[in-house]
Length: 107
Image 1 (cartoon, rainbow, N blue to C red):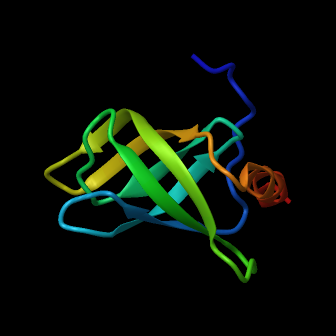
Image 2 (image 1 turned 30 degrees about the horizontal axis):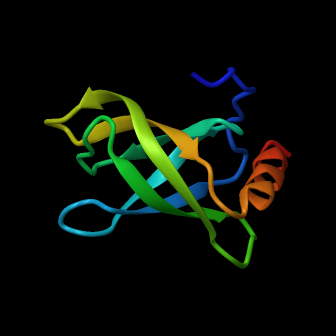
């Protein structure tokens, strides 16, 4: 298990496109984010333990940031579509850029 890291509630919206789901791509919004992972709000139904390819769009950042994550917890009301998922980042190239943008998200 990873050491807990400081969670940041973004001051500007961070959106995420998620691949690896059926029937295809789904979208969500980041509720909070850290160097260890993120909490995503979405209406997609994602299984616990599922691995996802992610494209994060940070406010005023011209390029999306690719990342990979695994669902480690879930909560919410499936009937209303209000779902929260806890994602743990999986190691991947470009990690330094993601960490820099996470630090800037608090500003």
